[in-house]
Length: 73
Image (cartoon, rainbow, N blue to C red):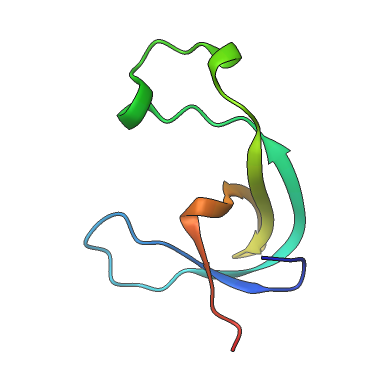
């Protein structure tokens, strides 16, 4: 994934709409995944991972790269 890619949010529910946006920046951020690590947050146990800042419906959103699919073919 790189700046300028068109990406779609991976669907985590039964929502069938394809939500797409354009990557405007790639940054490193920590992300605590409660489904894997539980509710008690300990930032010292996680490393930063790539996040994409994307333009989505006239808003800038920062989402983990793992939650996005590149769709510009």
